[in-house]
Length: 406
Ligand code: DI6
Ligand code: FE
Image (cartoon, rainbow, N blue to C red):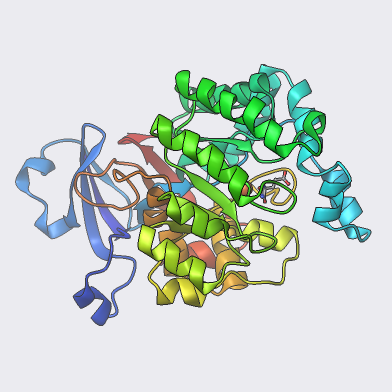
């Protein structure tokens, strides 16, 4: 199959020569993409298409923009209930941390998730996932972490897997048993880690339900020593790790994550230069989450200039969750990354394509290059900057998942 008459934002890493010429987005004007067996077989200018690719089905994209299929690399899409009343409490002056310490916050979603049936969990998550897919998302990461007991953690991960089975999309799961201390273990975080968190990680792994292991390193959650114990178990099982770090304070989580060769450290508003240097050395991706920054009216900006200075790849994601980031639009997240964090539209788009793939440890996607999966998003826009510029408008024309239009 051959797609022609498209402007391609390949998002391939710029060579020094490209950068010197000021070329952005790996842009190819009047481009073509040949697809075979679910993968990109050839990409380039239409005039250069090798003969062999012109003999099959040819689709004219009418000059539209094609990007790699978008990747939302950090979400908590599977959960019961919602936290609109907590939103009201915050508007009346309560802080996110104070609500959490008073037994609300994450723990209130834990109750709602435990009482939700499998069907309810799947159905509510599908609605949110469909909003993302409708914007061109083809790969979605989903975390557990609202069960905090063996049964519900596994039910969450199974629901995440079922989304992939029911839709044209890839879902990557992260086990987040170290998200919060459940009420039945209040004040006993270490015992929770030993009795529940680690055994459930082993069970999730045995059932093939976890692609990675995540944690929340924060005063209202777990300290670095506790996270290290979970990461040691992940390592023994051969699972990659990632970490919610430096979201509300600096506990050195990013450094800890880097020591374990983490795929990513996420949030990072309170990250310092030592942490940035450690991430650069370990190749850990910085995942910034503007939806949570916005919702919590955070004022401490993530250290974007330091991340740029030390060439740490920056991804962005929705963090879609019922508490700190009730957002299910990756396009709006692009806009927020630019407006709130002052990322460029090109950095933001790399953040939901090439760098997001890396944050999930996926080398087979995230750019339009020969050999990559044929996961594509086709937009009714002229210039890629339009994707980040608009607010609340969805210009998706079509998406291709493993070469199949959907
Ligand atoms: N940080 C977050 O922003 C989400 N989890 C986390 O560790 C929020 C989860 C929630 O408030 O329900
Ligand atoms: Fe999160």
